[in-house]
Image 1 (tube, rainbow, N blue to C red):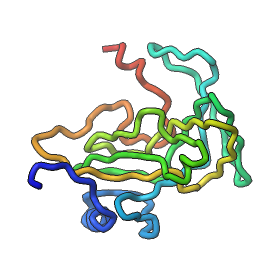
Image 2 (image 1 turned 120 degrees about the horizontal axis):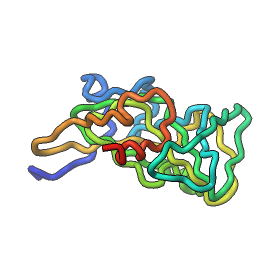
Image 3 (image 1 turned 60 degrees about the horizontal axis):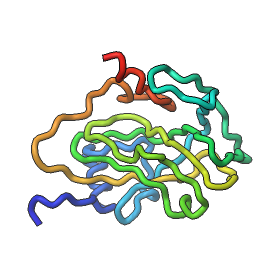
Image 4 (image 1 turned 120 degrees about the vertical axis):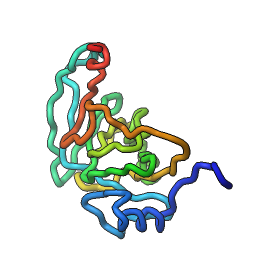
Length: 179
């Protein structure tokens, strides 16, 4: 129906990648699903160094390398990861979800931030949390991106906080308090 928002099919994602309306780098046609595209986990994580986090200040983090033979994640701890893939679109609203296989292991890939803004360009930071101990591996297809079309006038995402990032992004919420 006219005016309804729709999710792009896998064939539409592929078509829009070929038209450069959707950029996914690196791109692998085998990762296209019926209505999404699988994204993989990089080989690094960030963890916060303190138990109490403060929204008004930059919170210290440390980097953890995920070895090829896996890394054991602990429950009740937040791990920040990122996708291996850089994505960009100025035509669609990108959305991120965990794969069902990931969810069935009790592994969440985003605490709340699965919604992307039209115009976002960068790697997706994943807010990883597990229900029970789990071993994760680098380059695993851990989540999927899907795209909504958009209707009406809109502005492209232009926040300097996370745009065109190159690594894992801890919270930059403290910058909101500097205004």
